[in-house]
Amino acid sequence: MGTENQTWVREFILLGLSSDWDIQVSLFVLFSITYMVTVLGNFLIVLLIRLDSRLHTPMYFFLTNLSLVDVSYATTIVPQLLVHFLVEHKVIPLVSCAAQLFFSLGLGGIEFVLLAVMAYDRYVAVCDPLRYLVIMHGGLCTRLAITSWVSGSVNSLMQTAITFQLPMCSNKFIDHISCELLAVVRLACVDTSSNEIAIMVSSIVLLMSPFCLVLLSYVKIISTILKIRSTEGRKKAFHTCASHLTVVILCYGMAIFIYIQPSSGPSGLQEKLISLFYAILTPMLNPMIYSLRNKEVKGAWQKLLVQLNGLTSKLGT
Image 1 (cartoon, rainbow, N blue to C red):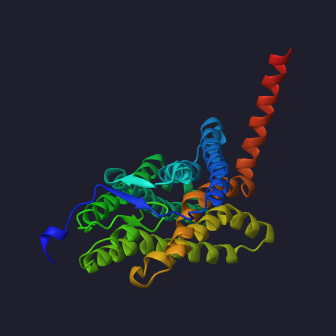
Image 2 (image 1 turned 45 degrees about the vertical axis):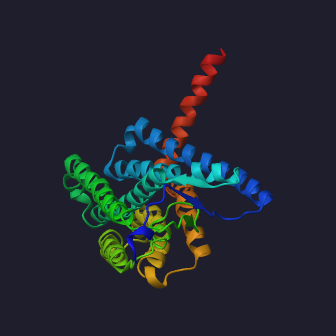
C-alpha cells in the first residue's frame, strides 16, 4: 500500500451504545447515578480503612489499592461516556484516546495482578495463620503492591505505543464506548497480526498467569479448609476468602472471554457490554461485596456510625 494512504488521524469518533436521543438521556441518568455510587463507595472504603486501626492489616492494605484502582478505572471511562451521551458528535482527540487507552489498560492489568497478590495473602492467612504477620510484613506488602502497579503500567505503555504507531488510513470511527485496545487496532489498514500476538502475550502474562496463581492459591486454601475438623472452623476459614473469591470470579471471567482469542472474540455489542461491566458494574460492586460479606468491615461501619451519632449529639447540644 502506498504511503500516501497511510496517514495519521487527529481525532476519532466513538459510535457509543445508541444514536437514539431518549435512550442516551436515560443512560446518562443511570450511569451518572452508578458512577456517583462507585466513587462514594470506594472512597468510603478507603476512608474507613484509614480511620479504623483494626483494619490496618495486609488484607485491607491491598483492598485500599483495589478501591483506588476501581475508582480510577471508572473515571477513565465514565465521565467521557456521560459527556458523549449529551452531544451529537462523539469526538475524542488522538491524544485523549491514547491517554484513555493507556490508563484503562494499565489499571485493568494492575487489578488482575493485585487480585493474585490478594489470593496469596488469603493463602497465607488460611494455610499458615500462625506466621501470617511474619510472612506478610509491611515491606513485602509494599513491594507486592508496587509490582502490581508497575507491571500493569509497563504493559499498558508498550501496548499503547505499538497500537498508535499503526497507520489508520483515515479510519476514525471506533465502534465502541471508549478507546479500547482491540477496537483501535481494528482501525489499522495494515496487517495487525503482530499486534494480536502482542495482545495474546500480554493476556498470558497479566491475565492468565495471575489467574493460574489465584487457582493454585485456592486449591491450597480449599485443601486446608477441608482438613479442618470443626464445622465452625471451616466456615470461619472460608468466610475470610469469600469476598475476594467473589471479586475474582467477577473480574477474571469476562476478561478471559474477550482477550484470550482476539481474532475470534465476541461481537461489537458484547465488547461494549463487557467494557461497561468493568467500567461501571465491577467498581460499584466491589465495595458492596467487601462491606456485606466481611465482619470486620461491618464492625468498622458500626463503630464509625456510633462515633458520628455521638458527634452529632454533642453538636446538637
